[in-house]
Length: 120
Image (cartoon, rainbow, N blue to C red):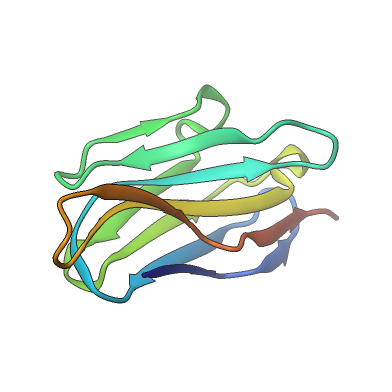
């Protein structure tokens, strides 16, 4: 099982960017999928989560600007980022809680991270 992000980007303030994250491999089920980010010199923070049923949660700093969604058939989660600010600059990480085929365990898998830079 692996999780791979796509959508590396550089954008001007007030611009938009969409990140994607796809899980692949021998997958039976995926429960929660999440986006974290880590800016230089700062701790990693949880940005957004989405359950298998589509319930979402966001950190206060991105509410109203970021939207996460998922396509369960494609094992893919998206992060639509609008009205981007320089303080959104960070490496963004996707994670997914996955049950592999033939296993009863749910394990958390992380992507490799993708750089988002917001600068004029």
